[in-house]
Image (spheres, rainbow, N blue to C red):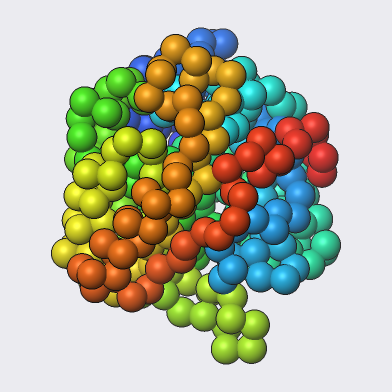
Length: 307
């Protein structure tokens, strides 16, 4: 279904874009769980070099970091924008122009970071940008906590999906993300994403991904058992038709002080054991991280650059 301004307005009057289904009338100034109003809001639009190699390459991914979030994990490294809603409101015309400016700067792709609560607006801005010459792949970078009906609005506009699959345990997802239904919701969303983009394809010249699905999993301290269940699920369901990115970058920040189990980084031994498990069960298409990724310096500056 192609998005129209009328359809976008209808969706804003009774917002059920994310699985929280708040029914907020955003046109009337109501904000739901995500904290979003009508206009898209973002905190940064710039070349980003810290994604997987097939996404950032040597030129950088054109990342637009949207403000607000429908999941709001207690340990979020982007807490200032996901929970505190730091950022600037943008017109749809300005958002479309930002996409084109990132392309002009040489971005490998347009990287929509946490855009779930702005899907109608993003659809309209992408359509306008494509009419004006946007030709690089468009990437949807997500927590995984998505409504299938909302993802279907993006069909034909998104080339690459990069969702998280954070938890298998409903106890963990309830404790850290207030979403006991996370696993069944995220796995249904990932299935829809895979239906849309299929198996990965790459530019033979640059090695950059042109189409496909990369599922990320962030290790949390002390929860290796949950991580193994997630990796086994992904491999049993998709085999090597998707890429799996196993992240060790968990960073304890000031807002995790009330969660003692989260007040440390992942140890090298924990990470190596999970990588060995992934290899043992047959995961061949994957990414791992090396070195000091667990640091606040890894978090980009949400200073309004590029807006």
